Structure formats: C-alpha cells, structure tokens
Length: 274
Image (cartoon, rainbow, N blue to C red; front, side, top):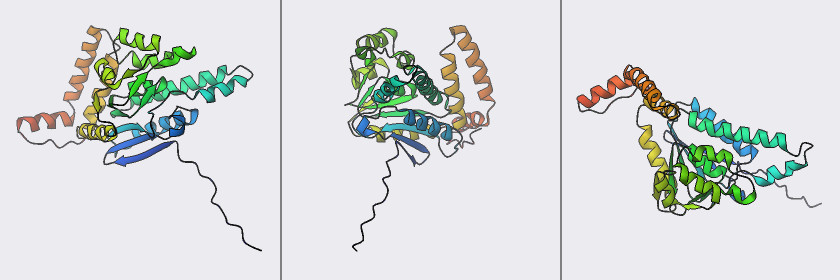
C-alpha cells in the first residue's frame, strides 16, 4: 500500500508580531487580509505586549507598525455583527469590546516609555484612535486618516477621545461629523502626526526616532511622559503647581545631577536611569 504524504497541521500566523531592534521593541499588527482591524484577540495581544514591555528594562521605546496596505481599519465589524445573535442583541459583548479597547489605548498612554506609530496606509476609526493614542507618529505620504463611523450610523465616540486630545476641536469635529479622510500632510498640519516621509520608509523613520529618544535617561522620560498626560487635563494654575513639584523631584534624581554636570563639563552624560 502506498503511504500517504503527511501534512503538518495548519498553523496560522500570529496576529501580532514582536521584534526587537536594539532597545526598541517593534509591534506589528499582522492581519493584512482584514486590513488589520482590531479584533478581540488583537486588542488583547496588543494590551498584553504593552504590559510585558512595561517591566522589560531591555526595551526603552516602542514602535507600533502594521503589515500590508492598511495600518488599521478600526474595530472588526464582522466580529461585532455576529454577536447581534446573542440573547441581549450583543450589548454585553459590545460593552466588553469597547471597554477592552479603551483599556488597551490607555495602556499605551500610561506606559512609561515612548510609543511611536509607523503608519503606512489608511488608519480609520479605532485605527486612527490607535495612532492618536501613541506619543508620536510617523506617516507615509500615502497614509490617510478618518473617523468614518458616522457613514454607517456608528459615531466614532471612543476614537473621538484620543483624536480630540491631538487636534484642535473644529478639525476633530469636522473629521467626526463628515467621516471624510485627511491626507498625511493635512494630518501633520493638524497635529495628528509628527512627520510625513516617503512611502516605504515610515517604519525605519519611526525606529530611528524611537532610538533617538531611547538614548535619553529612561527615568527622565518616564517622569516627563507621565507628567505631560496628567497636566494637560488640569487648569493652568494646577498644571504649573503640579509641574513645579515634578521638576523639583526630577532635580533630585541622579540622572538630572549627572546630565547637568555633563552639560557644564561639556561631556556625554552616563545615565543610570534613576
């Protein structure tokens, strides 16, 4: 009897790729066939990766990139729609998904290390929210950004939170009310992205920027990032009061003493990240 060939069991590619370039971790959304939409599993994987990086001293900065033509088209609408067959019409699952996604976005903001988005294509709805939740963003000249939920009867309310904290109110409202995409150049003018680069170079540009920041004192970056996001929610007087307290504590840090001495002595500082 002729032996039948044996095939290895099918092993799907991971939906989130992790690699490390020096002290920069690169997280790559890997659902190109689904335009990297944020499924329940991908949201969980992203959140878990960010949490793991939090305590990893070998990682000093993070880049979030994506495979394929799209950065992210937002929530997985097919996954959400299937749950309308639940006994509650999907309400519990919808609430669970929005809560999980919001928690993941906040984990990026609360990570004491800089996070940079490398956007090569469209970033819509929660995909645009992901870009806005990162500390910095590099966009390909081919990238576009939109919050088009209004076109399908689902206002982009959670993306609105991050978007409205990145761009002026009227620009945010125009994106939210019309759903029309904006170009990478326009996104830079609005403040949604930092730089626009030639298509295909956005990933390398994001890594280079991450490496530039990673050369600073990790302790100082941690203090500064946390203080930045806290003070923007305060009144002017409260923000100055808080920032003065932060700077006083920062001055007591070993790296601040070393950095100032190195500047005065015209030498390169030696960071101890404390």
